Each structure stands twice: as C-alpha cells, then as structure tokens.
Length: 161
Image (cartoon, rainbow, N blue to C red; front, side, top):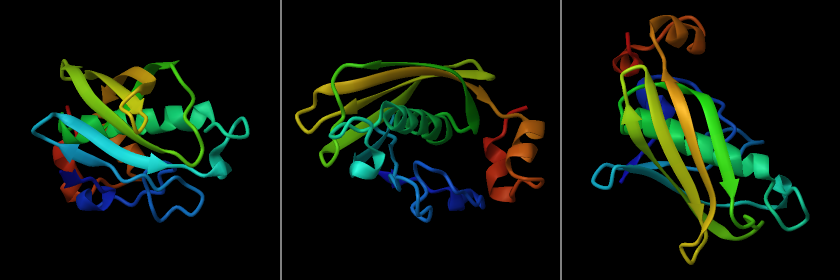
C-alpha cells in the first residue's frame, strides 16, 4: 500500500480530513492499494466530531467518504478533481470511539468527469455508509487557481487539458 500525501506533489494542504498537521482536523491517513484498485484508510473519531452524543456527525462521515473518493481520482486515475455531485446513504450509525475503514474506487473516467464510489465499514465489515459522486477533472486554469497561483512541477502530470 502506498501512503498518499499532498507534499509528494509539492502542494501545501490544510485539509480538514487528511492533513495531520491541521490541529482541528481529522488527520485520517489514506493509502492506495493499486492491486485492488482502491484507496483506503482506517479511522477512529472522538466526541469532538459527534452529532448525537455517541454518533459521529453525518457531515463528518460524508467528508471522509468525499476525501476517499478525491484521493481515488488522484492515486488511481492520475488526476486532480473536485466534487461535482454526490449522494450518500447511511445504513448504520458511525460511532464515536470505534474503529472504521473507508474504501473508495473510480468506476468510470471519460477524461473530463470521473464516477467514484466509497463506503465506510465497521470492524465486522458491515457497511455503515455508502457514497457515489461525480468529480470534474481539473484543467490548467482550475489547477492554477486551486494551487494559489503556481502549480508545482510535481503536480503538473495530474492536470488534464
């Protein structure tokens, strides 16, 4: 499994979900499994991220699903992309203080849009939440804007157009 990190491409990030240097964030580390064509991460969240007293807030769960799919576009499809549309189904609560795994994959890539899906599983392998999303691949203008004015050389290969 390959550890995924924005610094690999020369990008500084303060991502709420994946950046471990963000003191208010989740600090979830993502990995690419190229043999299985998935991006995965394990996480356990404390009560700072609760909605109901013992449940992780649904928006936080959705953020983790979205981040996993975004990493899938980078690690598996080789491009930076942003979410265009997403849909999530919650099947069981994600509980505070319990271990979970998120997995994501790219189902389709037409060159400009990518269809992805992700799921959060509990320690028994039961699916707690599922998401699907369409991502739009970043072209040069969008990448320049997202990078704050200059795209690092290491990131250029992940820009389409």
